[in-house]
Image (cartoon, rainbow, N blue to C red; front, side):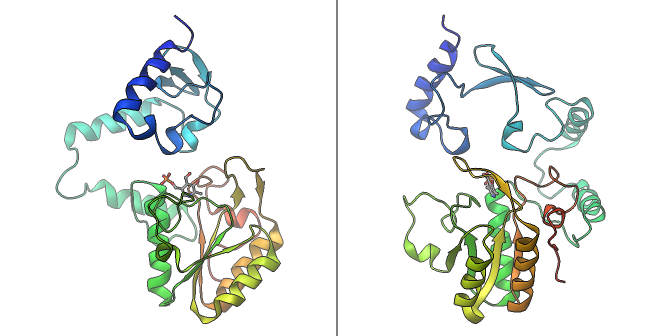
Length: 254
Ligand SMILES: Cc1ncc(COP(=O)(O)O)c(C=O)c1O
């Protein structure tokens, strides 16, 4: 048995029943062949793959694992709730408690909305920006990842140009480029997507500059557009509040 024989067998089985053997972030086809795709166990900061190899998980499940795997208080709370009710016809009273907690700990948050993944959150943010402003154009940094819906997926398959018709590009962290894109949008600018920290795969990672963070806020305020800070990766990691403010920008209208 090699150190990854179970993983290889699982990949073979997956190839028969799962598109491409795996999709999205879960696919490791671009990693070295020995990189495991399947993990069986996790505890604290460690992961064990299907062959029992142990890893220190510096990826933190691509972000969401903030508190470590299998943390006793978290697991106990999940079990408590499971014993009471799971997937009920209406939401649990805990929904209100969680919304109250989030809005009290995040200084700019008046409301909290819940969704099942990042794509849903960015799509809802885009829809809210259009609905609030009554405008159509959304600016997105070139190469920035905001999810897998037709309006934002970097993959061309199955997407028709009309679905991206009102999505326009600018260069990340480049004030002149953002200014030009805002200018070109004229009076039809609904929102600008921003991420406090550039983290796209296969690109160098860096933060926005203070000048850029402030300018993006000012440009949006002037145009009556929404500055949409996508914190799917950075939220609660770079800052307990809004990471944009950590880099000198303002989350809310000045
Ligand atoms: C900044 C950012 N926004 C949105 C998303 C989409 O999140 P999800 O894959 O949960 O739909 C991602 C995913 O990596 C992301 O990094």
